[in-house]
Length: 238
Image (cartoon, rainbow, N blue to C red; front, top):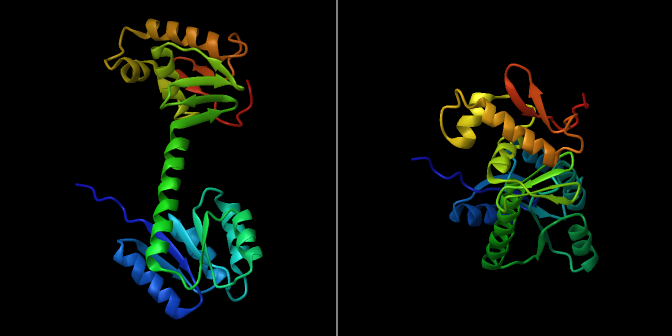
């Protein structure tokens, strides 16, 4: 049985006593912890560990917490960050939030309150990640896998169940060529030998709906003698 990976927390705090208390608190909750006492070290660990959550002190030697937050946001706009500050100046908290921090906690803080805020941020990040995973977009063509809806440049497109399943299969691996037999097996659930004409017919109907010009496909491309693929993002039009 595969175990669920532990939630990874990066603790960025220059005070050894506070850093220790944060590490012990996180470990008691079953979190995997990486620690940094400076901004530069934090960015090195962020790049290596790819944490699920960053606890970021604003008062750091050298590169301060706001600069660290800005760089983390540049690398990963969706990274959950909670800032920790002993300052009473609201401007510091506002600056952190404007840089993309998800929440802030003022020192001295209650471990119980901090854990509650951490769990809330992680839950929100998990929901947002699930939503992103269920929505795929390639050059204006957008699929919501959960809602089973399709739009192009903001305009809804009505597809049959089979057409949607074909497009969803292609769009999840743009650039990859699927053989006709493989597409039949994935969409219809059986050996596709002898049913490729049925597939070609559905591809034709799909193109008529999603392509701006079906005679010159922009999305669903034919690979002669093999099958079909979705044009990769940024790939020049043929």
